[in-house]
Length: 407
Image (tube, rainbow, N blue to C red; front, side, top):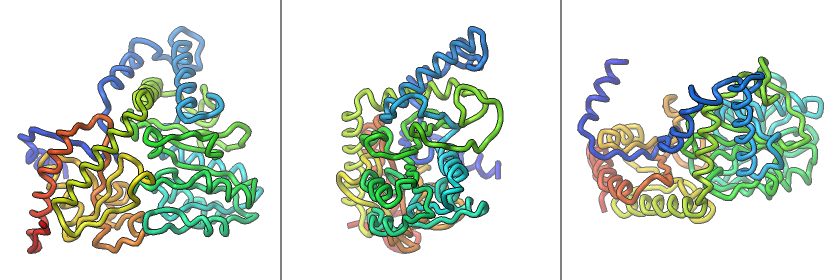
């Protein structure tokens, strides 16, 4: 396996232009974020923030400042409502498991949508081991939840609803405020959680205005370091810890706080929100140029998800018929263009994306999907290069099965 990877990497030698569009699954961390983190590894605030000495007090001061900034960016009431976790996955596990264990005396039913992120979907299903049940709400062809079905699903046994603000694969912006109102009107005791990782830094997000009880966000989804996320828990809501260990500055997640990564996440957030409208406009402009260019050059395509203002400004998901997605990602990689095919969380299982299946895509359409996300760091030249090499890559793959698909 290692030798095969070495051979694949050798084939990439000589690439002169690289464009990383796989921001669903990782990110390139900007230098200013790296620079912000570095001093906290060995020069200042490197101590445990729970201990009574200078490095510990420095770390405590820094982390409290980060709590405050992140709470401000998502519209939380105060910094005590924020818990830092090692990633979005851990935050979602804490939100779902912690809610269920704390509310189990009230009921055993969880309600989610069919297109939740894998770490929400699997965590909810895993709770079946503890006697909980999960009901999935269907979505339409653009990925919007069926609000009538949601209303019907809420009963006296329901304790938790979890619906992502923005779908991570097809960019659908869900009507979360309307969904919260429906759920609370039917059963005020139900907790409402939203994975807001793909909304944070891309659309206006205010947890208090939405009325949610819990929300999660991710560092790398906004060009911050991997290994860091955060969970919002509305003041007054009871949640059980799912891990035990040394308690530091936050009661819901034990262990010594990772000061460098918390600083990096916060700095990435500052950059995302320092020119929020400008960043959104740039992502949307580059995304639209990418999508329009692909559709102008190729036929037999399917655009997955909604268009316009109901779609996240960074998200492009296109099914390319007669071209297998994994083959395309390799072909593009050899040209320095890095994308993913469907959801990286499921692709190694060689199964079609559950999101694309839920919106009605057939096997061929799901397996031929390319997922690309623009960022504030991309340039016009980057997109032009992608549009130069992508049609050639598609036609080469299609040519293997005997047709080109060029208009």
